[in-house]
Length: 497
Image (cartoon, rainbow, N blue to C red; front, side):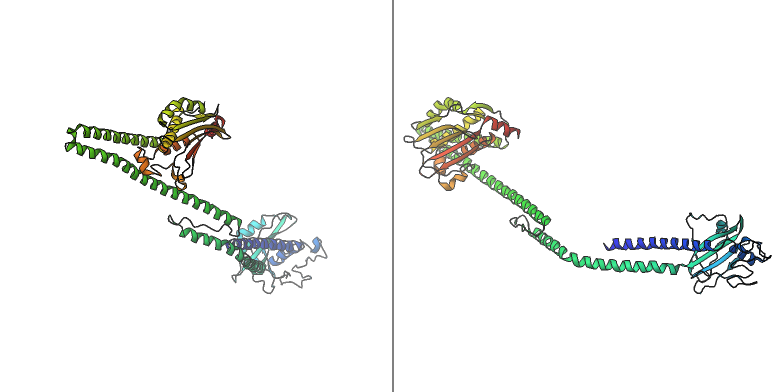
């Protein structure tokens, strides 16, 4: 702001200087024009010592010629042998005849000595005829004392005859006093305006800069291990409030990303540890049986048969674990598969003989709503049903166990429910039942050959269908798994989105 005001002051000073010079030059030119047209030729003639032949007023009066300021005397008091004097306040007046003789015609106190210009400038002035509407030209020159003066020239002519040039000059210091006074006034008012503006805007600046400083200090304190700090949502200004909210949102996203990364690393750690453990157990068992056989048990048919059966079972367990791990890795890559519109109740009717065979002595009940249409891949959905049914079989008694499979139409699509009367799942374990390698009863699951991957695979398949899966259970009251698949129209909209 100070630089702008300084620039405006300098521009105003330069512009005012030119304006004052031009305005004063026009005034001086007007003063020269106000002199009677027959006076200046008589002055030049008197100075030269030759009668001009032009009487006062342009007419002959008793053979005596004269003018208001002529050599013959006149109202100015000049007589023969005395140069006429003109009254131009604060100005110096001079005439230059055709021979180039320069004559000072005034002695105004303080006006200084008229400066003498180059002969070329006088010749140029003679060649110009002054037009009342033309712009007045002026020259800046220095006099004998070194003072700068504003000089205006006017040719002296009458009836087509050129007698010389009249020169009127004035010290520029007298003119510049006005410009300097105005510049001082402008600078004073500008400084006063800056002071008032500073006093008025200091509170505003304080209200703006203090919250910004707090935000900067808060940002400097935040690092990867300290993402829970937040900015105050109310800073007193709309822009700062929006900035604080944007920073808080960014921090929340960063915190969520770091938490997700930590959780992913932790899951990977658990995954590697559980996979190693699951593989180590059957491999250790196989290795133990081989050692027994090598020590001579191979020669005993009963021990050989039991060892081979055990090793076969452990190899099957390893084979199933590897298949499940490969399937999970494939599902994590969100593979594309073809979903077709179909009736889920029809699919379950086709699977009923297989499910009853897997149930053994357990009671199996089907409650299927007709025309339960949804979008699904038949092979993948069969795997979902088998996983849920196998989980129910594992957790129910072989003789008194009861498993109920139902299909119903819900507002969002079709819901598949697999319910059993087993021991149930403790409430604290429900949020993690779909985690990989998670088992609420590890000994029982491992004894039945499970590795805790079935429900994880089931959730991945349901997610790829655009559906949801949830578990409901209370300890001692069995468990129920609900799978919701979108209706055909909902699935189409979801796929387009």
